[in-house]
Length: 82
Image 1: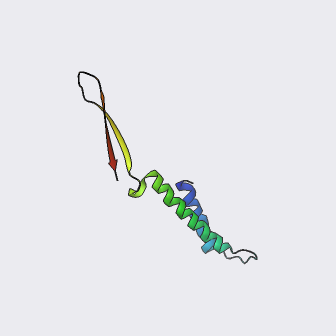
Image 2: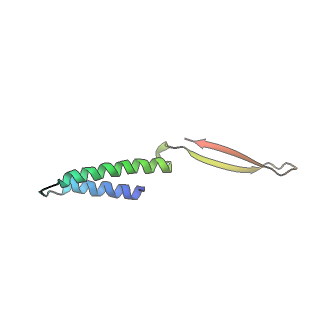
């Protein structure tokens, strides 16, 4: 589930929880809206952690440098940004 789907679930859940006033038997549509908002919020947090937004997860950037030595070699420098 990506960021867009998570935001969509939160929006649909908010509409069902706060804007729809229907009496049904068997289930409560407001409860379904709250459940969708919670699932969308959890999905949004997970998506943000995976993509590295918000300072979570750290981003690894690798730079390849040719140091100009007589024997060609490649120096790899890893930088971890939090």
